[in-house]
Length: 373
Image (cartoon, rainbow, N blue to C red; front, side, top):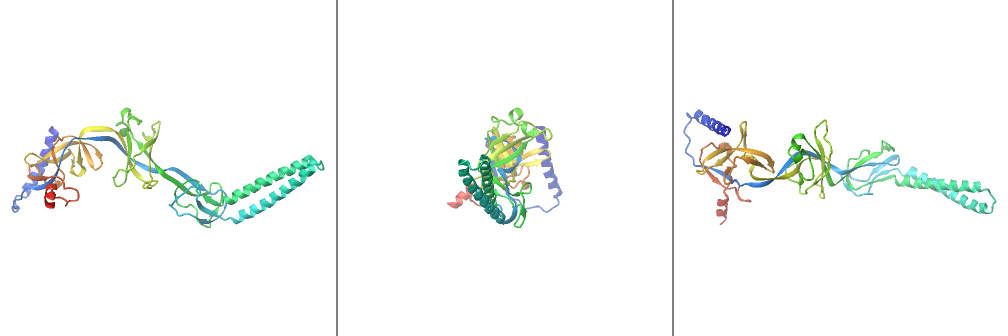
């Protein structure tokens, strides 16, 4: 209580000092009560939450690699496009593999004929069994070589192993592609669903029952976009680390969100809100109506005589665009939400409710209704 009186006294003193400094100035004409917009405080029930920074990542990030070497002759997709599984992405020079396939096919035809010719001789015991067995083995090797040549030719067209959003092409047309560590061509990100990775520190974990994340103390997961809006699709936790990082003192978690409209992209920085329960009997006050000072937070209210009355308040976390006020207000208090810089304690005001949606800004809702009649 003493701190509240001190805060109000400081505010009144600063305003009085400003008035004394202007005592030699010409007297200003008398003005009527200042019009102000007020919100009537009403206790509400709001969800409790823990909010932290997070980053999106594709649910599946797949590397696209060449399986055969050669000159890259063409890129068959637009970087950043969404592709389907099996869609052609790159074309490697086919000519050497077409020649290799023709040679393998000729060799396979020859060994097949030789095997068939020796089969009859072996049945008539005109040749040894070993000669026939060697022909069978030679034909099997030739047929396998033919199959490998067919695969190598098909692999000159590099296709998407999964559907998703393509990344930047690592190699361009004219480059010599080789297999192994130098075979990466691009990556594909499966973005529906989208994964969001984040961590909770010790202070965040302390807000949860038992000091850790469980299915019982997290009732929901929300994602906040860069513009402050809540993402339209609710998420769910799909990974909770079973240990605390000893270096950072954090617990790693991951959430999963549907992304059918491709609104989320891999690598975005967003905020995650874990819903941990409900808090009843609190008040929601616009952020702009909370005056922050070294002594604490306060709001300006209009009392029963329509005069400015500062009111120290205890604030909690943000909820959307509002502060959650835990103490200092009572149901029915009229909270002033505009013209705060022009107010002084005890000054008369003309309070009016917020303007109706679609009406002229700053005009009372009642006046707008009367004007429409």
